[in-house]
Image 1 (cartoon, rainbow, N blue to C red):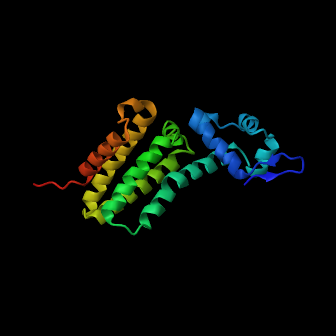
Image 2 (image 1 turned 180 degrees about the vertical axis):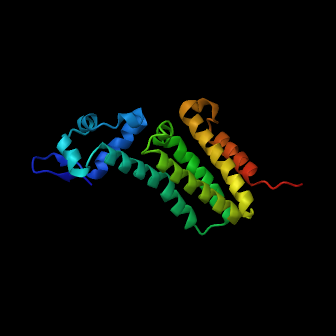
Image 3 (image 1 turned 135 degrees about the vertical axis):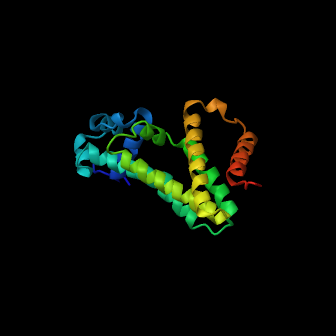
Length: 197
């Protein structure tokens, strides 16, 4: 939380700087995280930045870890602790992550910098965690481990494609709530249907 200085100005917290870094990534990619422009955006001095972070790399790392927690770790905790039926868990997982993907402008920006040394390990962790979560839910639905893993890869590929469309060409996605619900129902049905062969 931000604190108030005696002068009436607020003292920026570490979280304020991280939020500003995430907004910069969303707006301009990883290269947009620069101390001076962020300080100007926040109405602060560089001294405030250095009070909380050793350097820009430390801020970038903290921002990426925040994004990872909010978009992956928190979702995994929510789903794994749920006590509802496996089919309901799968539905909640799919609808929840699709809604988040449509709002998450940081993820696509990080994907554009996937080879960056600060980003690559985080994307590897996030991808592994997300695939493991989807596979776990599909095992709960009743698929054997190998098939659950294959379907998880298909589901995650569809998720990445949906996220890309939502940010680059949103007009191709269903515009109405009913259309969106039908679209997601078809996707979930395709991911969980069992072959009759």
